[in-house]
Image (cartoon, rainbow, N blue to C red):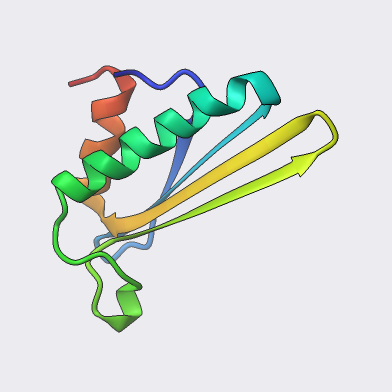
Length: 99
């Protein structure tokens, strides 16, 4: 599955941990498709987990945060994933059609 709405932007902390932010702003009729993409990414992350999910500063190996905000006719969905750099890059490659 390639992503049609979510586009990831990565940042590396220089110590092997990365953060991948993706955002999509859509009208109501497109929201179910965006949420399917979010769920597909989270499902892949869980199946290929580098360890337990949870805040990294509390012992988690990876974590994700999802925000949904509606403003008029538009809904913005933001997904942030944090975890080991190689794992996150594999996640992004999986959904970019590179793998």
